[in-house]
Image (tube, rainbow, N blue to C red; front, top):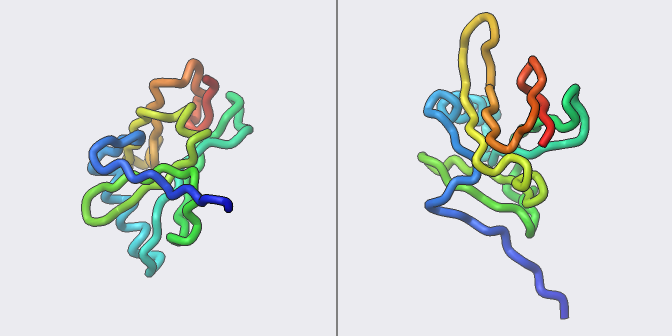
Length: 123
């Protein structure tokens, strides 16, 4: 008999930290989608430094058994796979609406090198 693991919810701990500005922008983007979505954060191979950050909204049924879930205010939830967490645990996500250099910014304590655009890194 195969037993299915359930995703781990970490109520107090946050493997991915967010500033109020980032959380507010993400909540606004989620509202624009018109659905109760979760934010998936992770990494993929590629980018000028070897690995790229990825973020996308997913439906609740897109949560996998090996994912970790992080609860934020107002029911906002972030999902991350355990492999990505090896590279981004403790990362801080910020948002700026500046005309030059605005958007989401990643501050990753595990990165040994970050590219100029700030969207890719090596660890």
